[in-house]
Image 1 (cartoon, helix red, strand yellow):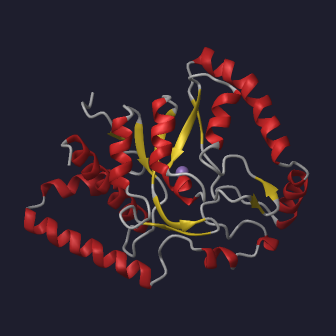
Image 2 (cartoon, rainbow, N blue to C red):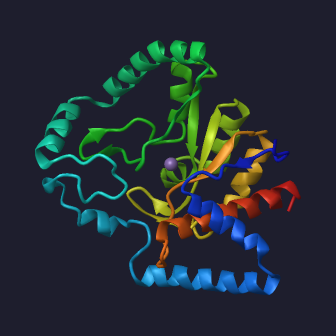
Image 3 (tube, rainbow, N blue to C red):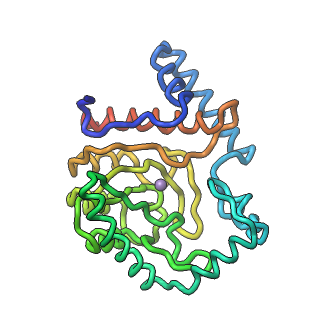
Length: 265
Ligand SMILES: [Mn+2]
């Protein structure tokens, strides 16, 4: 078992791990050169428009044609299906949505407990007040507490998405780590960074967003967090493996951040 308090899970495609491991065999000089190449790829990715989705890109997506053009959307709906879903959902206001969640948790949490399952709720992404005229659930850090209080149980926990929390207009991510971490409610962590707040924000590489990711790691360690941290969305790089390279960059940063916090840097 890894002695580190916080472990990085090397999930994802094998290429991610291979790219990560190959760095360890480089000489120092070669490593510096690799970093320079990486930097160049990132700059190039900006120029070519290959980075994460921006508000202006999103606004150009025409949902009257369905969801096929939506990035990161595993299920595709036709225009007709999408409109039917939005119409059905539109009558559910925020209160009704919370009532539905309460109904769900009351029934599912006991089953999770008896099965040894720990559930973790991801906040709204994007955490807007409303999205396409429909209500949202956890769009402020304080609403995580409401989820916890609806069904107090170890099985009812949080998927702590640093990026989504940073996008929220209210609250502070580091304070939220302390607040929910001290309650032992953080089940696992999505490690990503953004610039800006809803509705105008941009997903960026982990080291160039508004959130101090090193401070986030330190705060997690301080509250005794012993779960996993996984990379979340990351901008792609312009190379032969755009997604894998972006993920490898995030993983490398995370490993370095963990080493720094272990050494008290
Ligand atoms: Mn996330």
